[in-house]
Image (tube, rainbow, N blue to C red; front, top):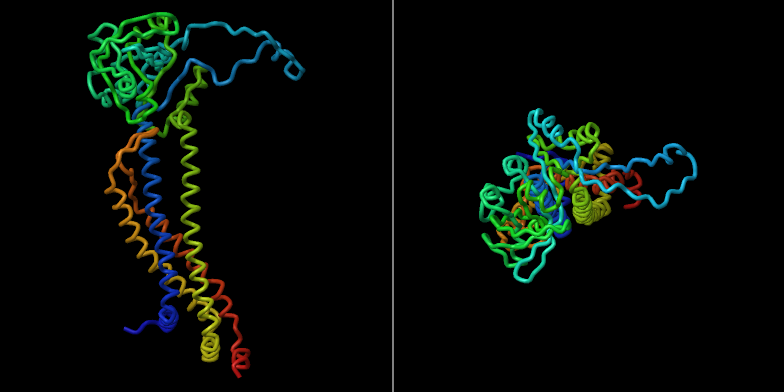
Length: 416
């Protein structure tokens, strides 16, 4: 079956300069392959991190604090005046979240919402001559297992052991390693309030997030209240939703209704999520640079073809080819390089992703992982193809436009 004349001419031009065409194809292929591989790696890490954050931590945390400090009476009275306050002494309150029971009851009435009260504070653990500063959270195990997955993260012990043992505590794997603590060991716990208790380690957990594993511990809510000398006080309400996307609107509603600072998981991880934006910008910039270099190759090939085939262009136009026909021939050359380069790049990208998936290694950091966490999706292939084909076509447009404007009379005169 014979090819259309324009397509046949475009293919002959590319085959005539095989070396330059292969270099252009390689540039496009590498750009597509690296886009697929880097996107898979970057988004795999990002999605894994977000999944861990959503899995490990509550979706919303209501804290015993207000977002903005209230104005002093003198500031309210002289709002537009030049007022200088000094020597202010804040009230020493020990009440945590006021009306925590009413808040819990109100939130539990809503469908798709699970809540758990907590009291967080600092604690000094002493064991074997070592002192460790940790965060201690008093929890109600029955409610806590509905808002976090601490029970799933336990390496040893059980959450219900907090009930069955006196002065029981669950510690992170990092805390245990740093002090050489094992399950069933007795450790001394000293709180900032001066309370000292002998506590039994009834469980060790590993969340996969180093910051949590190295500093967090859990005990019964009543026991934490004794340690902190804050009887019947709750300073946090943890909330888990069936629909995580509703965390932001619900947090704003809770803060408006009860007045306490309510942080959705997006706000808690805002700094890290901001880093993801920078990562994506670097990724797209790098891949775009590769494609731009490849486009210069396409531009060079087609410009050279236009220069060498000037006489042929004059003949074609004298035979009745219109400007748009000449332009279409050279744009097809860029399109062909873009399409073939994309197909080769898809194969190379798939091979790179599978190669990275086969690599296994221990990675310690903010999040622990074994090897690359990859995200495979057809979207990466579609985006890379769109970028490559559009870039290749645009690179061919300028020389194609120049070729279409050549005057056959001037070409013949120049040849004569």
